Length: 154
Image (tube, rainbow, N blue to C red; front, side, top):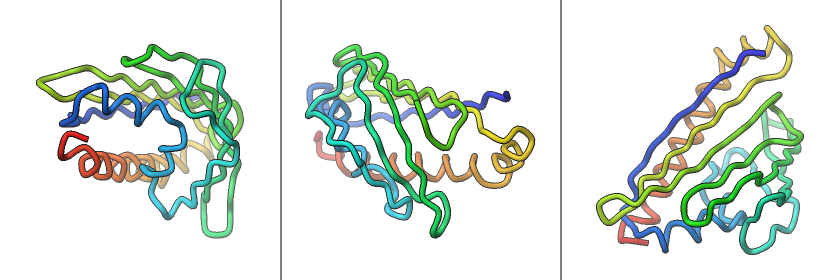
């Protein structure tokens, strides 16, 4: 299994008491996901996340090809960090740590994703040709949406 990593940082010009509640509400994930993914939360997540929470989604991998995705919120440090891990879905492994650090009147949001693909060498070829680029595009979209959302302090 080959492990890949995606690392992103973004300074959000809003206080932690505004930024954290947005991210601690799983239903808001839809708002920061590119529309072309056809992303849909299929479970009814509680208002605020907690360790052990299971969230189910459906997303479009390719035109006409949809996949289910099940994640678990495995760790929550309120106001500081949380981790979501895939339990079932398109990746062999998905571990996403979200860190929130107050900085200069705003919040530095740090995303570190460790992931591995299924299908061995074929999965690695897909990573080189499409998956890496697609993940980058998803996180670029997310950065733009969050910059607009928190531009005036939240």
